[in-house]
Length: 273
Image (cartoon, rainbow, N blue to C red; front, side, top):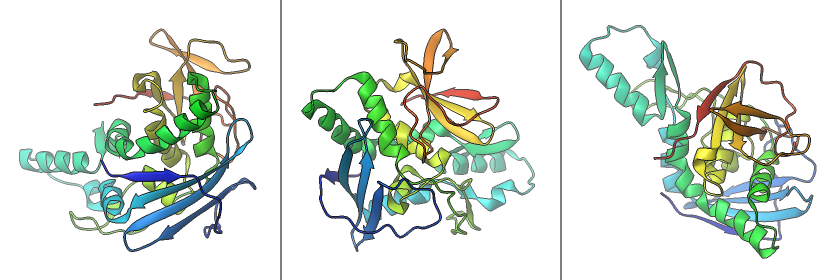
C-alpha cells in the first residue's frame, strides 16, 4: 500500500470545516499541495495529555484509493438478471468494496478494512511508539489510545457529492468517507470513523479480536477482552467476551462504555486476508 509519514510538530493552522461537532482542545487542518495532503492534528489521549501529530499523504495515490469506494447509482435501477449482467454487477460491487446482501447493495466492511489498513499502519506504529516511550505499552492502553485518536476527530455527516463514476452516471457510497477522507476532511460520521479506527487498531492487537456492531442507524466496533473492565459493558459472541468501542464522538467514552443506544444489532467479525 501507499506511504504515509507521521512526525511530531508544534505549529497548527485553523480548521476550515464548520458543520461538525468538535471538542475545544482539538485542532485539525489539512493543507493540500501539488503532491501531498498534510494533516496537522492535536488530540488528547486517555490520560488527558495533548498529542500533536502531522500526517503526510501522497495526494495522487490517496485520491485514487478514495475513488475506489462506491458504486454507480444506476446499479439500483431495475435490470434483467442475465448471466452476463449478474457477472458484470458482481465485478462492479467487488471493485467498489461493496457486496450484495439479499436484495440490497451494502458496503463490505471487511473489504474496506483490507483495502485501506496497510497505509494506516504507520499511524498504529506512532501510537505504539508513544506508549513504549512512556513505558505504558499494554493491550488495553493500545485500545484506549487508538480510540481517543479517532474519537477526537470532529463528528459530522459527510455530504453526498455527485462524483462521476468510472462506470457511468454518478457514484453512490452511502455518504461514507474512506478512512483517508476522515483525516483529510477533518471530520466523519460513525461509519467513517469506525472504519478508520478498525484500520488502525488492526495493527495494534490481533485483528480477529475485532468485531463490527451494526445497530439501528449506527455502526461501531467491539473488541474481545477477557479481563473485566470496571463499569464496562460487554456481550458474548461465539463463547467470547467483547467490549464496546464507541468512536463516533465528540464524546470520549472509555473502552467498554457507550453513550449511544444501538438498538437491535448485527455482528460482523473482522476478517483479514
